Length: 556
RNA sequence: GCUCCCGUCGUCUAGCGGUUUAGGACAUCGCCCUCUCACGGCGAAGAUCGCGGGUUCGAAUCCCGUCGGGAGUACCA
Image 1 (cartoon, rainbow, N blue to C red):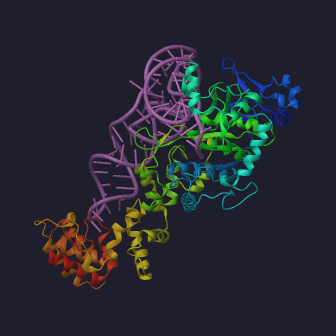
Image 2 (cartoon, helix red, strand yellow; image 1 turned 180 degrees about the vertical axis):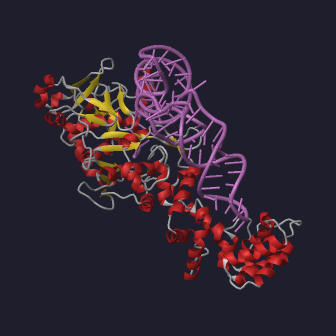
């Protein structure tokens, strides 16, 4: 008897499997796991539809994998298939990132598909925002909306004919059957039978006769279509969680097509994955409970020759917000654009998002996207939910800001300083000021608070309350002395300015540095906290600096 | 209710039977540097690895049980 060892995400296949696979791929079979012995068994379902496989059944006491994809390298095909509702959520982006990173790591392909089957909630604006966000982060794809490919269209709203054909084929093969019962009726039926209503559908319409159906139609009813699911346990090896088994009966025949003919997510998602040759599905853990139903659909698709293998699944952990709740769409922290607006760098946000469920190594949290791609394995993803920690995200962003070259940093600052930086002269000033603030920022959005004074006319500087010296601080005297010392200065450089000020205020007047430079800082910037004083004064120039000192001295 | 998932410092994590007196990071608190704020450096505090059994010479790591949290149980996606 062959034995297959199932490790986390890896199938160690026995010799001779290729021959068996051809059999598996044209049939539907389940793996039954004997919990006590750990033995696996293979068994056919719906074999009446597949006489060709009949002779092999008895020989199939061997343990084999139930037709899951065996792609491991460049043949891996991943997909990111958002539903364009609302503004991009960081959890969604994290999912996109992991798919992208693994595709790039393995050399496989990433497909971008739009699941816009909900006309009520989907919007073009949301789709455009997705493109905007993904483009900003540098997450690209090999196939799908925007770039085309052999399996288009890549918008579900344009694939109606494809689904219609699939529905017909699955009906013809007997996998789909008509269901006339309404939700309320099912509820009443469960109560009448002493079943918990939450157990849902009981598959009672599986064997309706033509006469039954005709009678129901005569009542004016239109049927939904349900998938006949296997009456066996269904298990799979989750790439991040290991082996997961759903017992028979824990998932029932589910609706895949509404009475109006519109297919549901539970149908179009696996159908498109099958048609597009997706080999691995990395998605949120909220979709985990629907996996046995998807696998059941896959079995049907394999049976009718549409799918070649069942994709391997990897369920990514939630991104949590406050408390024990999933980060809500209503929480501003969930919005990608909120973070961009505040001044996250793409590389900083990507780095932080990568840390939500994954780590590069035991002692490094800050890394580049290239380093992530080189190291990223889905099987290393940690299954526990991760809390979105803004403080840590900002800290990591600050590290990335410091890693930028000065000119790159200055360029990236511009969009956040549109109120101040308008001319080439402004840009030149910004370029010179950039090194002064680069290591004191975590968010690019902090730039205006730090640098506005450089772009403000001398007589418009506003003095913040906490920057005004106290009456006993000797500020007036300090300012007068400073003006004097500076007036005589020959070279207007930071070092000379510091020497003059230090000499007159600290050495001669005997002021503590804090009391000596504090009033000057306020005069120059209007704030208690500013970029380095002497360098700032150098940038401002002699005239402007002295004018500011005089103006503030008069106010004192 | 039923099914599934998850459970290491406040938070994110490393850990894959012995090199662990459980490592790193963020946050917190000291000190140093210092013209403010940062950056940087040094240091402190902080996790009996949810709990209880078992296996083993040895368990955060394996097994069983249990508790807690979360999700699903839709003709939403």
